[in-house]
Length: 448
Ligand code: NDP
Ligand code: 2IT
Image (tube, rainbow, N blue to C red; front, side):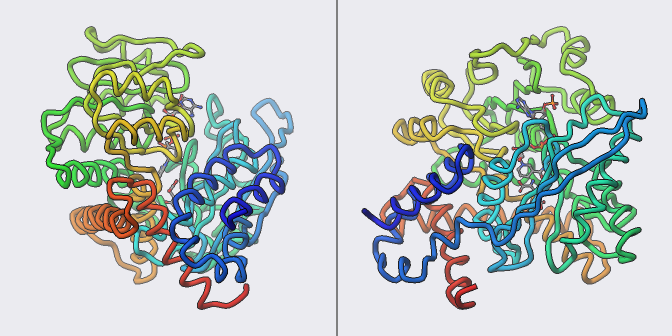
């Protein structure tokens, strides 16, 4: 059996009931086949792939907190420190009821390659909890965050592991987490990114993932003889990534016409009203029904099981920005039938493996999240640089660096795909380019 297949079987056997982790590993290993098989014995002797797929450290802990009724609640907390070959662990925290160890491992594994692609010195990690911030008071969120950080602070630090936001973790949560870290450790350091601007945050970090997604999409289109201006875009999600993707798409002359949340979705044929969307989601933390109520031409659809939501709308470009496996084979078929020619992932692994294959077979330009959503973590690394030099850069400086990084990422994966005879396969290009740097660093550092 080939080394790649052997390691994949081992991962499945040793990590039972973690389907998202298996899926992420499968995608990466399939892409690496051409690289590994060219030098299989050396990789096997070093157990490079086994070391790559086993996290350096997993921290799992109890998070007890008291709700507004005086009831004690208990959640599970996780931090997976996956790979520190090229820098301190770096990656977000996700607070969502679906969070379990397998999901955090899939996200941490993806983060290794994403962070490598940014060209910046950051290793891969991820964490989170099955805590649901929805419907909780600010005091409850604070109580949870303080309890979560009381344990997490023993394992992180500006040069060790630097968490940030992800689903359910935004500016409010980062503030509470930072306050508790500083209080317990008595250290004012850049231990978290996505901080508020008054206490060490970077301008443009809030916008970075969505803006970066559009910078990369624009470059991918340009290199394939297409222009983003005038294109209709279907976007899913209505959170941090989706909102700023919609905003930048509009600035580039495109027309995003959809968004969605966990309970329903919007089709707004006039184009999404970003100011209204921000008011509903960022300020009121309300449902999209409030968006529809304020926009007479917008249609609101309740989310139903097995229904294909935003992907049934005719569009040129699709940007999935909500969550993993939200775009399946049926959705891919509907998009292709409607003339969609490009897909770039804002979320982490939103497209199933079958859907990805379908896009590739049908010549849809497809960019995987580990490349197209890397603008968030890249700007987090820029926040770390600013914290280290105790200076703040202007919005324009950070935004220009972000754009340069995204354009560079696209060319790196495009070049890697061509070098290995897989031109146009940006999934393979991203995985190979991300892997080579990490593998080189791991080899140089010996068996650790
Ligand atoms: P937010 O919490 O800000 O927003 C998430 C959005 O997706 C919300 O609209 C939410 O709905 C919706 N959503 C979440 N879970 C589901 C679900 N199971 N079904 C349907 N809709 C769902 O998170 P982000 O925007 O930060 O993250 C979105 C994606 O982007 C994630 O995959 C994340 O890992 C990825 N990502 C985020 C980065 C960042 O910097 N924030 C960087 C790179 C990737 P509702 O409003 O109802 O909660
Ligand atoms: O998935 C991701 O890249 C993030 N949630 C952002 C991580 C970070 O450290 O900014």
